Length: 130
Image (cartoon, rainbow, N blue to C red; front, side, top):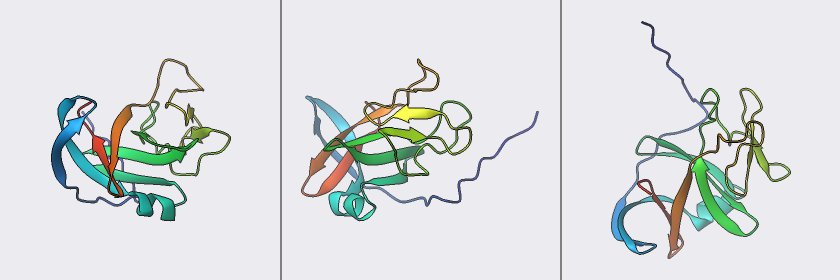
């Protein structure tokens, strides 16, 4: 049996803080993902690791959203390049995903995971459990 190790040198691992609060009517553990200022400085698109989740955070049509940054094909980085024409294109094999909801445009039925967010006092929190 062999092991495959995928190195993603274009990203950095960052620590997060935990906050227990309500999100859409249920108790959740929220993790601090970024600040609105940080997202704005990155031209409204950035990637971060949070508790083993590779997250793509971005603003699309006026709404801040978060989806998995891991392509459903071979695990390549979906958000390595800036979104164009309302879609992200995986760096490795050019699979395309909708900015609207993470739907795979190349192979329907293989969407990226979407995450619930809460923005409070300029801080963006993510629900990794929902």
